[in-house]
Length: 513
Image (cartoon, rainbow, N blue to C red):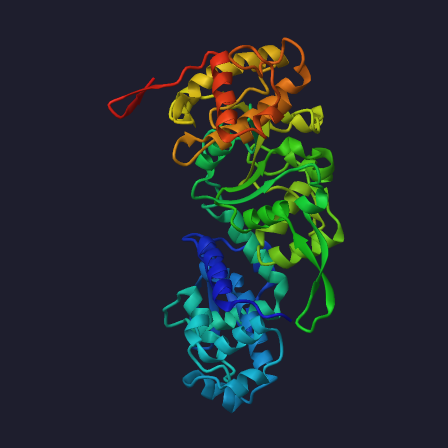
């Protein structure tokens, strides 16, 4: 069994344990009726406590919160996994001595496995602080210290904590029972929800209006996964698929490689109380029906944000989810609740903290039209052109400066008239230079390129084409290349004169509109 990072695992488990280690916890009735003794010691239950009869003269009064120790069983199992691995290569005496001295190169080379596992095992044997250890790993009770440290227990009865862990390991049917009860009673189960954001949200508008910036402002400082759709995006590149790779011996193996959706899905389920964002840029450039497949049904959300229904996934994805989410006890409980019956990892549903935010350029809407069933599962927010924001940018051609906002106010009505649509108008951030200056090359290769191929090309040879110089001579995009640099720049300036865009007047070192 592959080794896991003990320090990271301890942090994850400690977070879950503390989350459900509450002031008030009532043990589930099934547990109370089934468990009448723990490791041979009789137990009596009360509303908020249990009394363990250790012998005729000694009892332990145990708060119910301590039963949340069920969350820590996974850590002890992993500690034992490490010890079994260590004993394959070292004697008990060697294991004991390695706590107080460096591991030699010969000893390190004795360990078999890939470089990651060898490094983890070396750290386990030589750095006890990494895994909260105290007693040397050769001892039978070496796991007591890390369990008590993670639990944060300082009490005369603390030794019983380790008894309780052993009980749950021996009786695993009760682990999920306790975990589910703790989760359902948790007062912190409410998800922190951002205001004014729908669970499935598309921001749409003309190219360059700042749709991505809107999303960046929403998700700043928050956990997220980002992807961009394009015509070749499909289910495998959005969700994941088996792909070949090589193991440490150079043999070809196949592993499930998760993509944006699965990464966001797993990360969101692992921390249900914090918003997580899946960001999809240019969503309509992909064939959404093909990309989402059956999971588009999950976009139907309840009021709490969880999917209204579950959907089935293939065994490859189910196996991956089991590997990643088996340590998240609330996962199967919630999936089963949504499904209406006991469910395994072959069924999925979106968690209530997963927000899917997407951008859409309306100029690209004919690439892959969205059907009405897909559209209705999203909230739509139009992002208009912000001309005030565009005032901060200047076009510089051959020493002359032109205001970008004025250019937009002139050119966008022409685009609307020619295309009979607002979709292909230029947004305020269609170009976004770092220093606020749009150079000749940037303007020619991006703005004029777009205007020609998206707007004017089909009207060439007609009065519709506004690619004209000041004397109304018609030209094409290709005519902006092949001449001298000064001639190409002059043609752009003459184009500005044709559309009545005047240069800014500089006074006292400042540019005044």
